Amino acid sequence: MSALILNGKDVAGSVKENVRQDVLKLKENGIHPGLVVVLVGDDPASQVYVKNKGKACAQLGIFSETILLPEETSQRELNTLIDKLNEDPKFHGILVQMPLPKHLNASEIIHRIRPEKDVDCFHPENVGRLVLGEEGFLPCTPAGIMEVLKYYNISINGKHVVVVGRSNIVGKPMLNMLYQKNKQANATATICHTGTRDLKAITRLADILIVAAGVPEMVTGDMIKKDAVVIDVGVNRVDDPASEKGYRLTGDVLFEEAEKIASAITPVPGGIGLMTIAMLMVNTIKAAKFLNN
Image 1 (tube, rainbow, N blue to C red):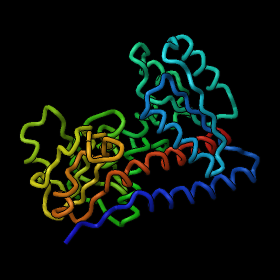
Image 2 (tube, helix red, strand yellow; image 1 turned 45 degrees about the vertical axis):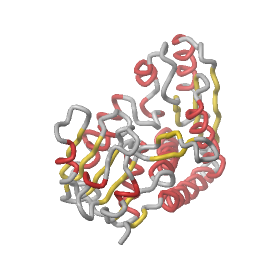
Image 3 (cartoon, rainbow, N blue to C red; image 1 turned 90 degrees about the vertical axis):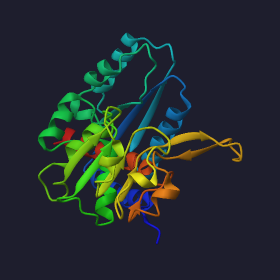
């Protein structure tokens, strides 16, 4: 029996409909939610992400603007732009698309965005609120994972959840969200990484396995516990001469093997990737409400 496919499109659609209703209510009160996205350079993957963010804003009635800067933009120029956007009342959310060109200091930019406009939830103040379980923004991809589990009535209460990957974008915040003392969390959480010994022994203990390692198809069927829920966060381009495009998209999990063992699994594409933008819209609405209190 094949695993239940956790369809990110359905969940994202549900989240976006709630956002659309929130936007209408805010506009009735004279508040027009606004998001600005800053893209430095011409990284192809970043261009696609930015385009999709703009499209989502347009669909939901959120005012959005994309600022394109050349690759050679200096740190001072980018800092000056962030200072200007921090003070611009049109924009409730500011997002600087990562990765930045190597000559720019990403940490400096993250610190410079006002915490109340930091819809990516990267600023140390917002990360601190997350760790403490206080009200605030939630990082988009981990929040999207939680939303998928909630939509499909998959409880994590008391379960052992293993996260593979320790990035600041997914792994670390995911871990902190999992063990919070509330009815949507309360899991026993383990994080694995490149320094983990005998990775397979740990992943096979997981009731829920979340993989965000950035390595194509690294998690194989023998690394998964029978009837575990598998959440694949990875989106990787793999060369494929048989494909019309010359490549195919794959996750960090070997789907063909995993779906025969797992009770439920997210596909790639069509899974968590769609949730990231949906949760960015949620954070933009949160920012608009907060800044107009």
